[in-house]
Length: 206
Length: 206
DNA sequence: TAGATTGTTAATCGATTAACAATC
DNA sequence: TAGATTGTTAATCGATTAACAATC
Image (tube, each protein chain N blue to C red):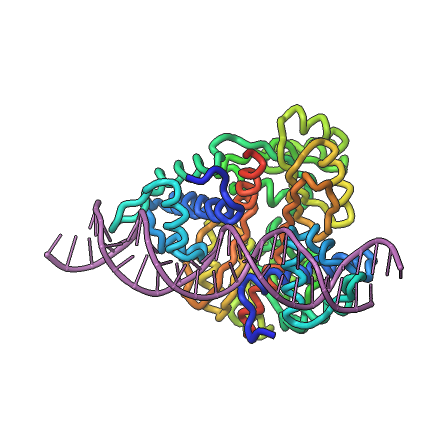
C-alpha cells in the first residue's frame, strides 16, 4: 500500500467512487472491472491494478461487491467524513449547483451560499439560506469551510477568489471562464465544458 | 508533425486554447510557457514540447505571441469552423450553460435548446428559442448538430441520451450524475464536480 | 551585453495494454 | 465442470522533469 497516492491514482479512485455510488442507486449489488471501464473509459486492467494495490477486494469469476468496494475506496481517499464547502453566487448556475444531489451523495455539504444581491439574501437555494457576501470571512471560519466554489460572472471571479483566499481557503473551484491569479499554496480547479468539447470534437472530426 | 494527436496532447492543446483566449481578453499580447503552466498546472517543459512538435511558434527570451499561437493551435485541432450543438433541458442548469459566453468564444454555437415543459417552449434561453422536445430528431438534422448536451435531471438522462443517439449524435455531454448506457460508437463525457472535489480534498487532507 | 525564455535532449516515472494463471 | 473475472506479470508507450545550449 503506497504512502501517498499519485495524482492520477487519486483521480481515478474518485471516478470509481462516482460509478459505484450511481450503480448502487440503480440497485446493483456487484460490478466487474469491465463494467466500470465502460462507464469511465478507463482500461479494465488499469482498474484492477489500481484496486489490487490496496488489497484483494474482488472475487474471481464474480466481480466486486459494490458496498464493500465503496467502503474501501472511501477509506483510501479518506473521504468518509463530512466536508463543508461554500458556494459564491446564487444565480442560475449557483442554484443549479446547490440543487444537485451530487455533492450530498459524496458527503460534501454546502454549508453556505453567498451573494452580493440584497434581493437574494435570505432566500434559500437548495435548502441553504443565502448569506450576505460581506459576511463571507466570518462564516467560513464559523462553519469550518474548506472549499470555495465560484459560480459568479467572469468579471467578478478574481475579486471573489481574492476574498476566498483572504478568508483562508486553499481550494477553489472556478466555474467561470476567467483565469484566476492566486498564491501558490492555493489550488484552483477550473471547470471547462468548452475545452472538453473541443477536445472531443477533434477525435470526432478526424 | 504527428498524423493524429494522442488523447493527452489534444486535451492539453484544448486547455492552452482556453488560457490564450482568456489572456487575450485580458489585453495581453504575449505569454510564456511558465505563465500557461501557472494557469493550467501543466509543466512548462511539457507545454513547450507539445508546441514544438508542430513548429517553432515562440521567440526565445520573449515567449509566444498570443494571436499567432491561437491560430496555430486552432489549425492543429481543426476547430476553426463553427460547430453546432444542442442543449437538452432549459432548467436552471440549461439556462446557465446557454448564457455562458464560453462556447461562443470557441466557435461553438448552441443551435437548439429542447425541453418537454410546454411552458418553456417558445421562450428564449441565451438568445435561443426553446424547441418542443418531440422535434429533437428533425431539428438535429436540419441544423447539422453534432453534439448533444444533457442538462436534465438524472431520472430523465437515460431517456434523453437514447433520443440523442436515435437522432444520430455521436458525442454526448452529460451534466447529470446518472450513468448512461450508449452504443460503443457514442462518446459520453460526464462532468462531475463532486468527483473532482473528492480528488482535490485528498491532497488537501494528507 | 545581460537577462529571459525557447527548443531539445536524456533520464525517469507512471499509464496502458495484452496475456494468462488462479480461482470463484 | 464450464464460464467468468480477478490479480499479476511483462512489455511498451507516453508524460514528466531537469538541464542547458541557442538565441531573442
